[in-house]
Length: 266
Figure 1 (cartoon, rainbow, N blue to C red):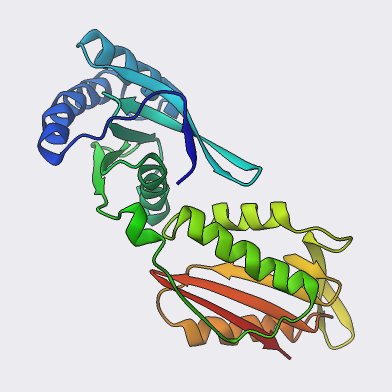
Figure 2 (figure 1 turned 90 degrees about the horizontal axis):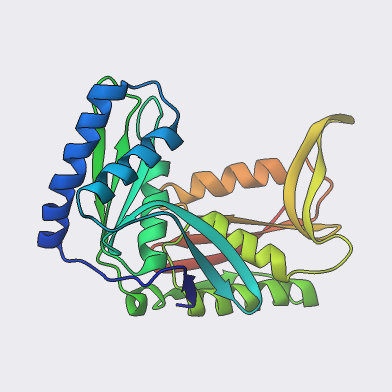
């Protein structure tokens, strides 16, 4: 996968991770006991980096990595990269949730690393989650495409499909769905392409505007990573479509190794 790093990455095994993590988490608890739980995230990040370095660990703050594809570049900044092989994402939130975990998995896959940790300083006691992945680049690019329901013979629809397949062949699956969407938007052109507001109608009344990814004046596209209850998701997309002055929505769903392309009509 084409990714640029600001420092050289060195994967660390699980045993090595646990040895380093014991030291890092010792500093985490000390900081929480000293500073309490109401500081900004950056204060915790800077203080943990300083204490880890003072203890002999190599730490890189806000390490830059960039996901690349045919002229598209998306930068990410990691909170802490420890010993060039472990990513720590530090939060100051009410509680950790699945979006925080997905963010760290996205970083691990982009960096080609297996282990990382989420740490939340805002909770009354330190909240942490060990996050790991065994997904390989080879396994992530082995996707299955189901496009029997796709109806896109026009040039813009064909370009969307071609760019999607090229992107997945290059990056593989399981990354943040917003990254794929941003890349696809980058490669689409035309006066009506991009994210545009679309009126929502109830009868003859406009009740608001919904931002949609557009291909043309009559065609939108929607990218998701739904892994359960896909039929219900489809039903609600059609309900949305029925209240818009659009002809169709191309729905792209990424479900593990299964990529489904469906064109929804009123």
